[in-house]
Length: 590
Image (cartoon, rainbow, N blue to C red; front, side, top):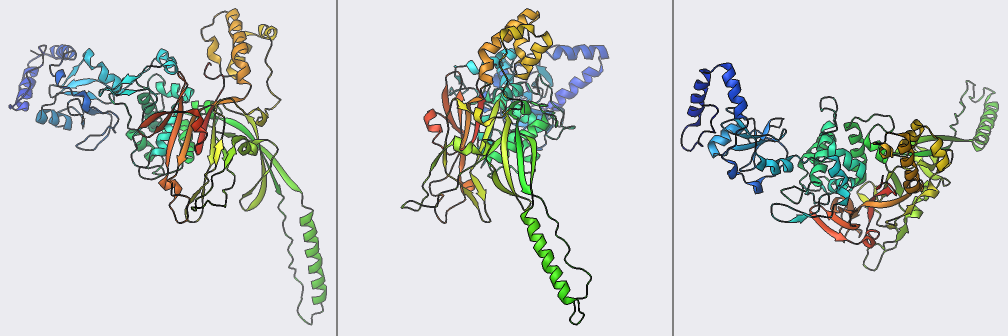
């Protein structure tokens, strides 16, 4: 009957005869009996679960059929050989594979449900929970809060230890700049916490209405895999993410093509902002809430002078009698024009702009070389490079063929500050790299002298003033400083007041100091022979690596593609840093 256990596994018999016989029997039953039978068969236990080979399973690859190469929502993974197939109905690649190879257990790669083919019934068994966790890792709010306090190492199926969140990413040929950028962004706590739930508990726009929705979905899936402690492998292959990057960028960032990590980071942040539903409005996405700051730009340039028309309808031909008078007028007009240019006023224009990262100009590359022909590498403190944003210095630039002087004045710094050290310059033939080592503090980077907030710095309210505030004013005050969750569970006003007073005494002072701690550092390494005459392009031949800190143990790790190893913080400042991500002090406790 239909309610009996699964039929014996096919060996040499024709499976279509068995299915045809079952179909004939089903035709003799009423519709109610068929529906009841289907409901009962959905909860069958499969006798072929012991044939599953977990060591061959790899869910990091693109979800596409290995036979037809088609992708879509109905792709099934064979749990015996690890290959992907389309569909589960008759004449589909998955059905034919189950008949030809005798592989019976499949998983729906999108929904995460398990099926037995060719018998076509759903399998529900607690022994498959580890496969579900490896396929689609999920995190509760409690799990997310414990991530930064985790000290325990996890083991993969090969008994290799790894630390969740600090795993290697496979290099698919010159994709190290993508790997390093993703490793750095995975350490930004608000961004990480959002994408651990994006697409699961937090809805994302559909791919039909948003062209970058697929990119945001793939980024969230990759972040969830990197922080999972139930993986079958200790490393992650970012195949789907890189395919989504290549498609969204029209192959600007593609496998086999090296690129600058700063250009990729800028592009990725803007695309993720749109992909999660962000708009032009400030703070409309998690990207803007985390990385967006405000800078005031003052531009000085000479006003454009419209030259007078020196040609008039006068007869300056010889013998006309007007040629001498015409020459005198021409000389007078030229003299007046030169005096006008000298007395031209300077035009000054001030505007405010929002930024996601700050670009710092590197000091000029030294001209002298060592005895072997290589450049002597100088060192420069970060504070010297930051003079561009001291609010006083005017930098000479050329914009649209017009010489300008620009002054940058920071009005507001974000909670997570990205600094880009512009090491590469492109000439007519190849890329040039400035190897200057920029030294910086790993902790307590004080940027107070570079910030000029409108209306002056915010004052810390006294306890009496806090008690005089209304409930709405208290919540607005917390929201302004990014700590609205402090009173999430408070009901009475007295509870809100006590929470605000505690926040002001323990956290607000640090949030107002504009002090930062380093959480990620991306550096670019060039081969030893680059920099000498007649040698190769440093961008094409170089490689990227990333330094990140494990907050629970304060241990720094160096990650380069699949290689993860411990390092000392003293060595970070001696590397050729390219992108720096700083976290405002006090954000970890928020």
